[in-house]
Image (tube, rainbow, N blue to C red; front, side, top):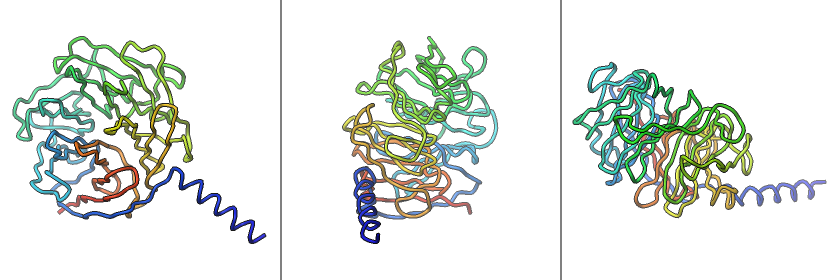
Length: 318
């Protein structure tokens, strides 16, 4: 019996190694302090690979130059006037380097030119453009803005910050053409529109806003080909799809919407190669992957799905 048990363990270990990675190298661990209560939510990277995060408890946007926390700048405070936010969540940087923020409790999309708040412009997302709890923002090559509408289970596209030519896809449900509270969104010429369909535990791909036959991948669980409340989705430099598997505390990579090449990194926890509520994710110009590790109060950067180059920037309150 003993040899049978050991053989079974060996088979299980080999099977897991086919798609689960552990880090091969650990990088720097840095810390910064803030003066307010905070909770890191979404994440964005600009053309200079500077890191931005929304802080929905501190009602601000934070930028650092790199994973050392160099040149930390915070902009915003609680309120509804210019220069103020009330629970900012979704975040993106457009091709001109302008910062787009979904100002959740104020029900508006904010665009600003820089971290001093220059060019402050807002679009009310109420009435005909009503968006509730936007968890993700994307901008395409034409400058059009995509918002994942978590509360209304749809994706809304507008031409610009004025809200011109709104068009949406999706409706509440679990079947074809449905979302159940979409989270992150990614738009690229190679992959089209990718959405993390949070409560359907799957990833959805539309070729464009006219696509009537979207593709789906995933089901509820913690195994291969499964997700538990996926929060975000992104595309790496080779066109592979990256998914933040929130409840399972891991990052997943697949080659295509059939799930080929399924690989996973991470587990639930507070240590190296662990996550506690990962939400935001982006890829920088070098292909490195950044995640906002919400409940661990840190940003994590890894070189690739193997976890090589693991580095963290931890936030704490004074």
